[in-house]
Image (cartoon, rainbow, N blue to C red; front, top):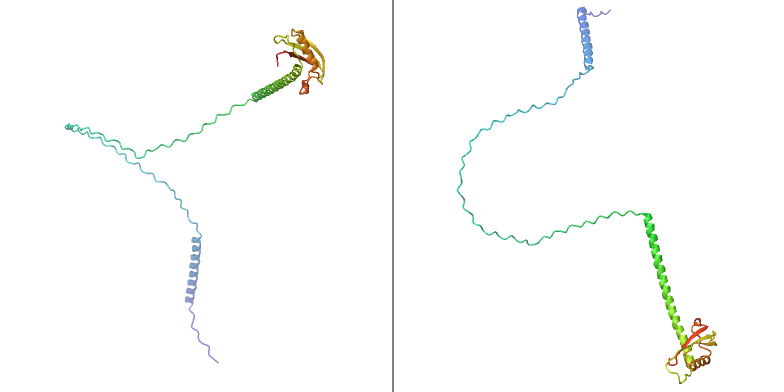
Length: 249
């Protein structure tokens, strides 16, 4: 049989000290943790600061010192200065180039306000102008017509004079003037004719005072049958008044 080892006796007092120390360490650790967490979670105190503008101090008032009376200095009269001699003034220098002033631009005249137009007056004015123009046109037309009529009348009178002259010329060529006629007496006859120039009647309207001359003229008229025709034909007249003098050509 083997022998069992002999164990040393346990120290009961040291064991109790170790347990107490372990509990104390745990308590310290728990307290440290508790107070440390509380310190971190504590709210930060708020500090209020009031800003005030600094007021400048008033400047010091300086009282001016009373002026000190200074006695006036004695006046000393200067000696009289000699009179300066008058020298002739030099002539002013002539400018090399005369500077011409630029003409100022003319401002355009302001337009006058347009007069107010009265439509009634304008209508009357237009009607008066139209009436004046019509009168002028009528007067010009009348004057032109009168001028044409005068020209036509003059032309007709000339043509009629030529027509009667041809008739008298034909009749005068057939007159045999009696030798006892003295002077240049005139006889007037009315002659009725046809458009063809044929003589219908011959009547003594005013005698020349010589029956032989009147009879010679009447024979010459009848001998000149038919009489010349008028040119133009509208100059024809059924009754003609013919005047004869023996000495007229």
